[in-house]
Length: 231
Image 1 (cartoon, rainbow, N blue to C red):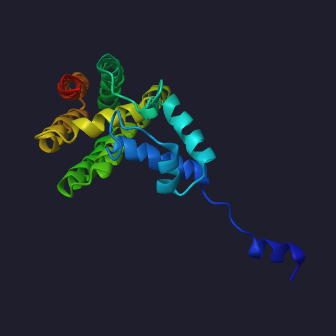
Image 2 (cartoon, helix red, strand yellow; image 1 turned 30 degrees about the horizontal axis):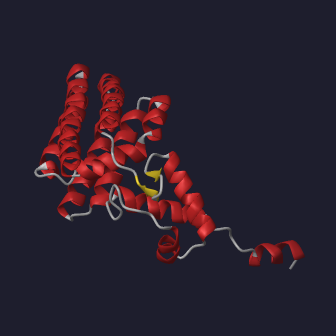
């Protein structure tokens, strides 16, 4: 047996993610899913113990989350979970409405039955996750739904724009999906998008997509306004 073959046989595979990346994923998910709530202080010493990583990694993670808009540094307080800003939220929903409406129209005009089938798969996943009270699952399947919407019509630049906002979008989604009746109303609105795409009705698909975003925006406004009033 040659030396080269022996070396390959015992080679240690590099982990798919570094410890820093794993800590970043865990902290991001913890904020988006509400384990850490807006305004909560993020104490480095406590995070080191909770995550089981060094203070250097915690600091790097907090800096990255600050760049994503999930963490803010307050004078005399240090890092806290960023408060969701109502005006910023409105702008995010404006961008979503414009781009998702466009993508839905294009999907309908493409006339490809496989698009509706792929969207149905994600929609079924959303409903199943709601039934199991699996909110991270709802977020994951919802993101997959929209990725399909953009990728099936080769709108990768538009998806890239949406993807840059994904963390903030999911932060907002994590609030709206928990509101009363959203587990039925949300999927029903998304089903209208899929039905219009299946029929090849571009205008109806556009309208259904923008209506869905508008309703989510209205819910987010209600939640954020209520939070601001209670502070």
